[in-house]
Length: 158
Image (tube, rainbow, N blue to C red):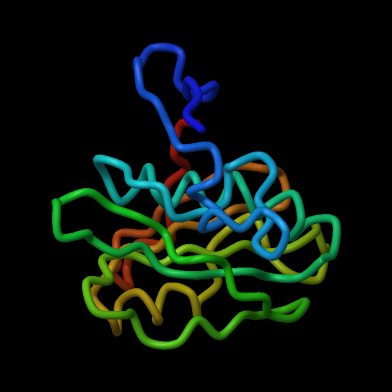
């Protein structure tokens, strides 16, 4: 069953309505079709898609979530599914093969933390792995860290 892509008015694309749940809508559920994994022309767009999907849950549950962005064989970029962490961190492990960026959230606002910005540990993770990082903040903004330990982050336009 094919349908017009409702999330892409400017692009005349068609999608298979159940492909995102492997044609098994009972056991694999993504009713909105918005879960990470779609292909994008840039790593930033893939990270933004993942963060826009998981950040509301992160804020509501006050838990951090994170994952990686990979470059696909066709040159497009996709985000891995989010991994759930705790209230003050998430272990996303080393970047997978083809990994070009990381993304994570900071949960709900907490005055004990500067959670509207990358933490020193966030910056070091990206610098150590030589990849940029994207952060979804409690206020709903998305920031980018270049992967240099000297750059704490820039707010990205949404």
